[in-house]
Image (cartoon, rainbow, N blue to C red; front, side):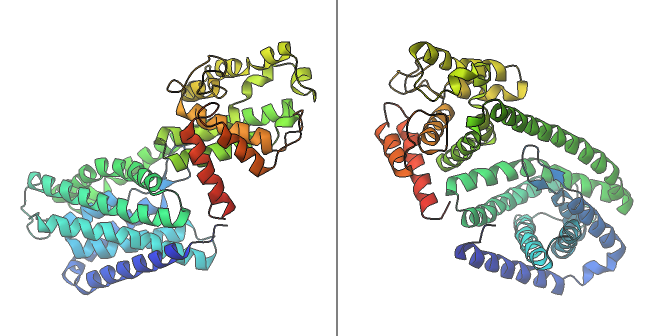
Length: 429
């Protein structure tokens, strides 16, 4: 289990303190809001339900709870104090119930921190909205919904920026990933929320204005139906991921010498891609490409691949066809179309001496160049029993990778490789 860094520990304490201060202020000033306690209770359960039934983000382990639109509706209908008290309470209780089987100390710590990180953007939303002259239904029941639109979008934009900042800082301190990667992940997660949050908050406010609290209840059914549809899509994505694992396992059963090699290549390629700040799509698929980069060897005679002597020229010609075979296999699967050129190009070299297409620097996909370094390093320093030379030490293999920069390997990838390895050796990986 990863031990939090000292920086993240201090950061978490600061967020908890700030969240507690904001919540305490809201509680002290929320006296008038409690006159409508039946409606606040309904909002509490709506927020609690959204937190308890999150939507699984496809292709990741992240869950997305649709609590923010409900909190926005609460703010527009009952004011900032209600939003900053009922909202966090609903989130906190929802997280506790959702993870009640976990260790109590961890549960309270995680729930408190998660709630505190939510309080800050809620407060930013409310403060920004009021600073630019936005009016809530609590202040003016006759306010036109159309006049709410622009202030609400500005307020949500400000909250999104604060959310990205809070999340990026925490993620970078906790995972020790490069700042640009943490920022990219934050933007990827919060930008969709910005697009949908304000409109849905408007829907909540409109339903409340037209039908009172019964209008809010109308949201529950479509929310549950939509959640089920998205979770089904996420399950399909998980099934696709399982297919990747199955193909990789099959490869290892077919050629036992690859056991461990594929996972190590996938792991190293993933670390380098993250360090280099590659695109979100590349980060999503680079590990799959690492697991499947040698899938074309399934069609190569075992006697050639498993021999311990150096292959003949004719045998090398057959082996060199495996990137083409692998690309042809993967091209048959729509979900894997993105990694086809990566797998085909993982033996290309910047000087044009690689195979199968003799591509030169500038024409080789960067992801293929990442796979090339990961594959070559593990072939030299890994536990591959097939190879016909003695395995190198890690330092010797690193020297070979460094020596190949510009000729055999992309210099950008070599630089990232060295930095990742230095981080691993220092214990910061």
